[in-house]
Image (cartoon, rainbow, N blue to C red; front, side):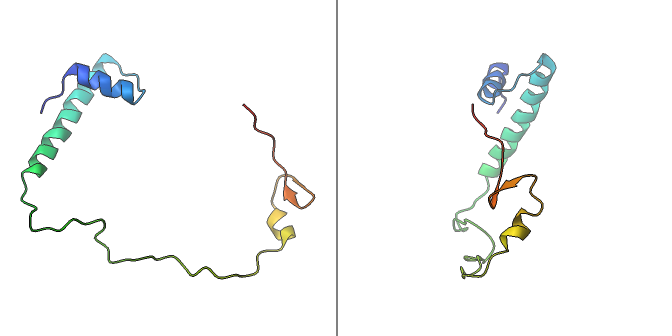
Length: 95
């Protein structure tokens, strides 16, 4: 499948990326090559392969949620640039 220049420009617009004429030509070739490869993959017979979310046999690898003592507040705030009344002090961010 060969992408047209207009399709490349549309993709660039969707991605909010400005492209030069040279980049449009380059990406037209590269994206077309990717789509051609994807078409080749579509031809592979995968009927005997079950749908797979992951190939690893891992299930719920999170540690147990156990109550443990936390670090002392003084240790936590030791490297803070600013603290006040036992809390991190940060500049207000208002837009």
